[in-house]
Image (cartoon, rainbow, N blue to C red; front, side, top):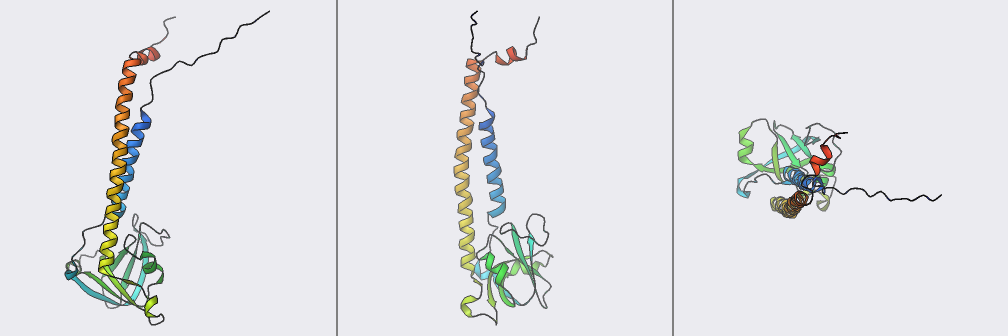
Length: 205
């Protein structure tokens, strides 16, 4: 006795739209995180800087997200310094130049340059460090950490340019994804105008 076989063909349906929407949402998320993390804050002109610092009292690392101490992350953290005979707290963030050296190898006496207007506010918030010069008696001049104002500005401008390039690339990807999603919707409406009704309709038998 012969048995005939018939391959089961899976019924085609509308094309998925969600992958293109997901690409767009993911791009927006990445740009938002990048903007929050590395977009530079407004920086003062060099003539507004004043030198403070001196003998380092404490140097602590805190997480930028939770503001809790002990962060081991190389990013999204800041060094917070306090100096003897100075009530202010000073902050050196991870997206400034030579952060690793400031974090791990900068001690003893440090001259720092900060915005005199920010320092004068005395509002209890950490004051941003825009330049620094370590004066460590146990190290030679070439081994001491030094960050100039121009180096800080150049690094911040690089950070801004990186965000702008990211916005351009991911913005283009988002627009392309939305265009493909719109075309897919039109294609589905043209080729499967009653697909949803057919699938959702209960059997009458």
